[in-house]
Length: 444
Image (cartoon, rainbow, N blue to C red; front, side, top):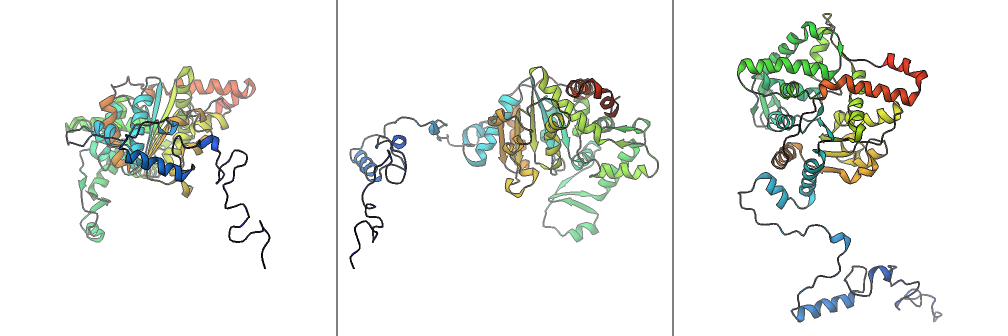
């Protein structure tokens, strides 16, 4: 039986085989006003005409003339010079790191060097992963501190504990991660993947911390920044006695007055030794309340008077959150008007889709008030092993930027806390200020 015209059949609707032009749309639903009539080839344009035009150009050996420029084609053309082996690390990053995560590392280098290292920016560095055992404290972090490129730090306690080995003249060695751990245990060797060291390194470092923690100046509650500054003094004295120069970032931070916080003070061998001495009646207590308020005061002070705040996150984890939560502490908890950090730079191998904080993007942080939404263009995440990317970024920064004046934030802790208290009083009103003032820990 013959079907009525337009009722379907092989062609579906009766007019499907014809080119449909309605409401300014070509077949496929794309607006002709957007894609034109063939002046510039488009995946959504007329394919046959574009093909014929390309063949005609090629047949006539005509050069491909530059056509109107799309805003999407404004980036640098990819045409790197050949690598010769004579390039510096900075030159290699500028000329050959053009796409994928290499390009993100280049963007990270440019963000850090051209924007975050301006004089009015306060830079907070966070450290996770076993960076100091690999020598990156000496290779990268100390040079950044001494150049004034890092103003305050949040680190895992493990990084600071293993950093101390070097300041005490104790050795870490390169090793083979395929060795038998049973044999290593029998021979008294401890490993961090492919880093090997004698078990006595742990015992000697534990003994050092227990010795200094018993000193009278440690017999009171204090912020982790104050503890690390005092510990850095003793590490520096040991370095001088051994004549080994500056090997420890605790020592370097002590000299530069860079405050170092740890977000989980009990989660390291340093915290374990503090806990052990508490059983003997030692009065040292690391007060997390002071850490929360001090770090918030650093960020608030950085933002007042036209200044800016930047976070440089190496890895992720608890130190990343502790640095970023300074803005919710200021805004959400204390009720002080603020917008968020101005610069966000992260080197990480963590994915965002697992829900972990390590992989959380700067865009997600905007919803928490952690990052200023107006400054998202100044946010870069480089998905890379930080043991590769951190040395490269450090080299790039030192090659392209002169040292900055040290901000010496450790010496300004009380001044910054006073600012926080004044703004808290303005936000809460005089009636609540006395109660709040009494509850917030003050600093010696």
